[in-house]
Image 1 (cartoon, helix red, strand yellow):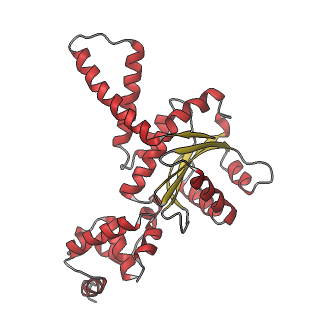
Image 2 (tube, helix red, strand yellow):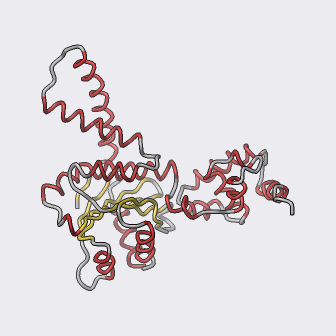
Image 3 (cartoon, rainbow, N blue to C red):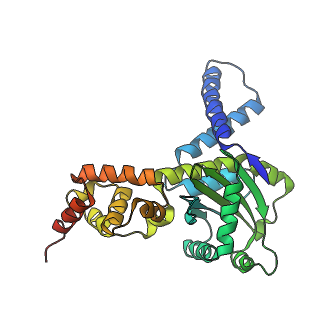
Length: 296
């Protein structure tokens, strides 16, 4: 198990990206630049490009392409825990060649067992402050996950765990049987770059929320938003989701767990929604919602 400092890596990337711009300016003025230096700066530009795609729909494929420069992975995903004091891991993000149906199905199957939840929680809690633990694993014969891995043609997994404040994140990267076991050189190489992808998954969670929620949620306020009903049409997707929870009578804490975000994020989204809807309470929101229903 390895420990890498995510923040320092991202700071180094930012510094190198600035060096890339400076070096490009120098080269444009006729200054020399060696092949090794050119390759290093090109790699830095690749990371910078990945960072710009963090919140986009292309992030998953871009991340897999980025990792393929060192080692190929079939799929990757992440479990997010909004509140470590009340742990409820949820599938936050996934991408790759395994179908969405099977990936979600298998994640549900794994999370349905208390043992798996405790493993995720333990690994996250053992992660160093502002850092990440990296582990390499494969299921042994008799392990309940072995059938899942065999069905999907997966031979091993590399997982990263981190925590930040009250929340935790565990990402996992799946290696295909057809690609074979990771070599020692490949594993050493990916330990240098996987923390970058892991950190960006965490950033994406903060920006756009859980991928699964985006695909499955269809509440009442969300429905009015999608049909461009006046006032509600101006809400963002996540603002509408928070309003849906308020109408259902859920607390801020429950909403945070449902949407896989922090309680502070829920309060911020609620305040934005209230301003856009010109209401000041859940009661006024409910009254507006009732008035906005289509008439028969």
